[in-house]
Length: 464
Ligand SMILES: [Zn+2]
Image 1 (spheres, rainbow, N blue to C red):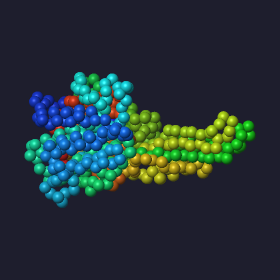
Image 2 (image 1 turned 90 degrees about the vertical axis):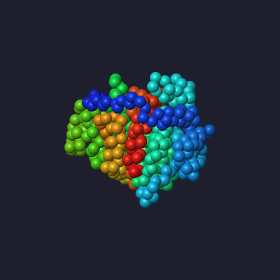
Image 3 (image 1 turned 45 degrees about the vertical axis):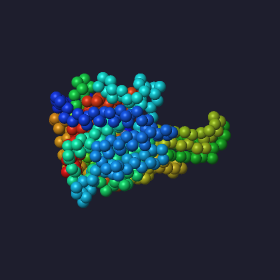
Image 4 (image 1 turned 60 degrees about the vertical axis):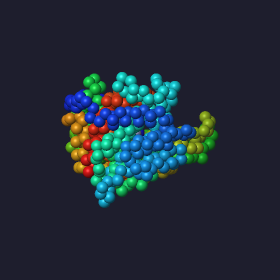
């Protein structure tokens, strides 16, 4: 999963001045982050045969141990063809619950023949690090490792224990993500360094805004099935499985779930409004004032980038049925893909859809894999203050925007246990450079030095 952004590029209202760093504040950490990221990208940590995720874990462990972590405090655990890593920096006050820093080591498959450069040969060119995992999320991970190393180099001693963990299958089954969250559910707070992030202006390259993520929608895959005795097509019956399913899908397609606002999305929509096209921004503000406002709902539901921010959405994505040209269909199935607003159980959403489908002959089944229902994390004042201070320490005055993701992240596994989790990557990128999961993935190397500075501030503030 990459850093999710909510914005379709729009007119910008705020100019942020990037902090001038005439000479690097922590050259050793900056160099280490890039070097480690290149070595990690060269390891093809893709699920399946010859998965190199365990080697990435060994690489990260070696760096943490060289940086001062006790060897016995960095555990690598093999799971199937992958592995996960948990590194612990004990704090001076064992009564405090730990701060957890969460990332992942695996990447999405990349076909070298489709890329301009080999995806597993890291290259720095024109200010970008290219390679599979450059933006999702090997560089983000190694910036965090280098920042922890730098904190130790500076002699910092945390009062609260700091744990850094990397899952090994975030892009696929999330089995290790679930195991880690279960083990670390006692955390005071989890920083997901693979979540949220910021945007650079397309023309000027200057920082425009930065987001943190405090909730995500729950992913659900539902199957609908209708069966029928069938028969010869020359002798049609009144009830036809394809027609039944079509009518049900039409009703589902036309259905809107009740619009919702949470404390997080209220804060989020208000902060996002100024960055949107004027009509969308006005509709967001009108929606916040009155979530039943018909004109606002019409505008926001018509826009693919806003419809998911105001309600649960469920959409038919696959359908199949029938078995011969000249036979009445005996079976028709459809898949409905849902993104559920935090706070609802998938079973309740499925029951609501069954009512909307309006045909008792159609059965519904939840076939979701790799996702759990989760609520929004609380608006923790200590996190918001520390993150705002850290990001404005590197980009003075940058607008800070809370967000709820429509996609899934490792935070869901923590939120499932009610452990507060926040996406808070310091990396900024142009929308047009966002190629996470795609071809020619890249990340500006200009993110490294500010990223280190950001983490030095954030990790210390949340552990001192
Ligand atoms: Zn990711």
